[in-house]
Image 1 (cartoon, rainbow, N blue to C red):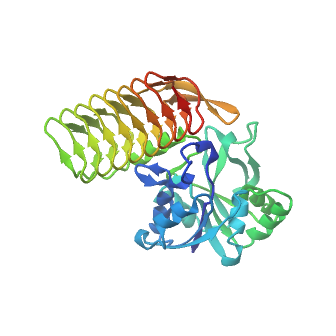
Image 2 (cartoon, one colour):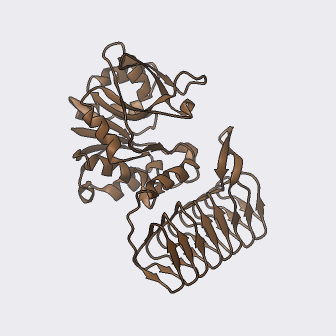
Image 3 (cartoon, rainbow, N blue to C red):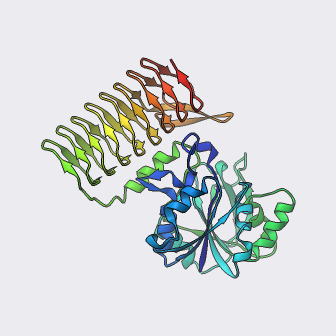
Length: 396
């Protein structure tokens, strides 16, 4: 069976982290989100994959190439305009016949989730889960073992069962996609809804891992979930008087200096320099070539590659894009906060700050919880950041 992976979107609600790469390539536990999707397919003996790409497509294609190093055979189809996932699937219409899988490329999923969809033996079918916040998704109602209705991001409570975006579909779906596109509806859930009057759609429940990254703080949940299955592999150099508790992965040519304490699960990439006397708490991922200077504390955070954190800094529930640099005493505390995304505010139980790539901070900068700092910003020493900053802001 072939699989179509939809990986064309930018992920606008994850800005500024998608300034130079698509949402699907954001690292979770030091692996692109899309890699989890490919891995889960291959582990279920689905090797023939078509990726629909668009925004920053070169980043995806250069990483996965023909798929051979991932145990897959990957072809690419370009969605020139990112109009919706139904429109994205329509781009592969001429390449598909019979039954096939459809998966979103921007969700972290595991082998079991894909396996449950395959083992259900029903097509068309959709993987569904119960959600505490169904208004963010396509919600379904069930009747006599079939999906009766699909409601996209309803404002009122209809059901707590949502579509994951993972389907087993047949080529018959394309006639409904074409009909919906002709009416200006580009979502795949629109086409699925249109098909319900013609053939039943079987809901498939799974206990497997499925987490969607809609907002920046979702990345912290994805990262924590991915680290739960962390294979412990310790390389590099660990100096004396280093305390390591729980599962901790340390990459090659990384140095963990004396007096540092790490509480797993924590993953540290290659070529890093940590410490001395740094403390790293659980659910933290640190990419490659990252420097964390003495007496800094990092909790439940994602630091992408090439970051540099100055001495006596404190980061909790933060996401740092590639190449963020700070001098000493950067304060990014986590707390309950309202986060402004677009024109809306979201109450988040525990969030630090989101820092876009290649942003630099002087000494003694404090960032209020829930603040989003754009890419390429320059923040002078002693600044207090209390509101979102657009890309390339200069704070003096």
